[in-house]
Length: 136
Image (cartoon, rainbow, N blue to C red; front, side, top):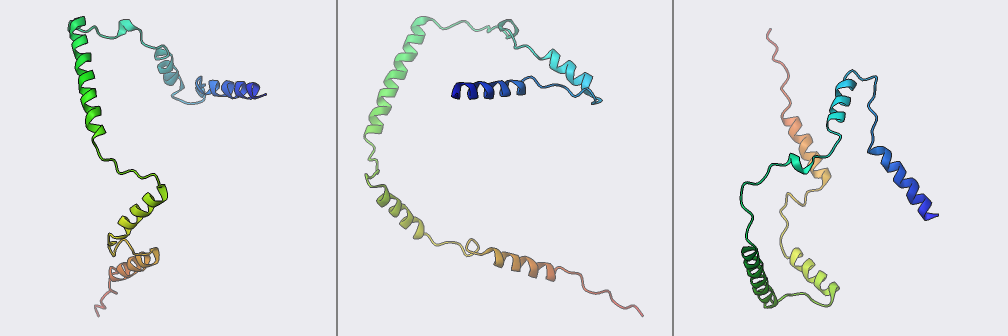
């Protein structure tokens, strides 16, 4: 039953990869021409050839050896790091929360939405133009 459901789902997806151009559109002929011109994937012959010579097998082996040595040195440095991971996730989370709580919050960050909207209302009132002057 699941194979039938998956097969139905895959056939539904296949239709998405073969879209049909709306023939009523004024740009339909141009769109279809672009689609037809770019329908195939590029061949290897379409890619430019490299003018640089390929490295010798000895040079490749030397690079691999260098990477192995460097990787071993890195693994040694990582093993000397004093990782501060605890076995108790709840204690770790509590410690992180305590460090966060010890940092004071900027007053502007603690403003509520009502305070912000009140500030916006007061600012708009201050920015309103005064009534026109009677010139009589």
